[in-house]
Image (tube, rainbow, N blue to C red; front, side):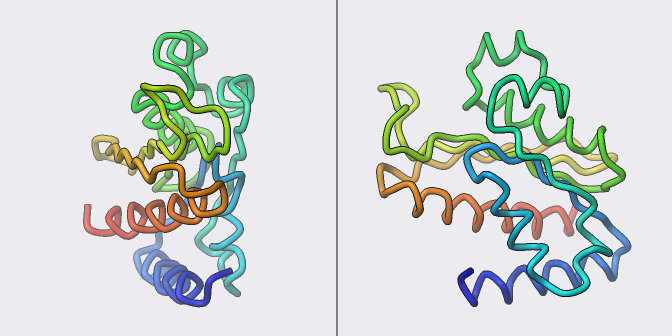
Length: 163
């Protein structure tokens, strides 16, 4: 993992630990990379409550309760689904904060309206309105899209500390 990202993750975990907050992740296009980054840090078990890798639509529905009709209406890569992923991870864990990530890392799978590099994020925190972030990284390569998504997910988790 990128040393700068590890330092950032370590600082994030320390801040969460100081506030007594736990985190859950619901990841699709990142395939668990956010949870993996956080759990590379010694002592992360005091903050990382659990991670869901919900790559398929069925997994999103079965594991974290994203309504199938929501996916059918908007597609898996959409704002409503990203929000529902974060909210579902929060509801199905003992975490205080959850991030949901769904996108098209490529190289295939993109369309004119949902191109490769499109990623939607949801950030849920107990007692607050779920936030949404949309990124269009472009067709920069699968690894780069996933890395950028991890960086933005960390940014959202940092933002949750200020809520």
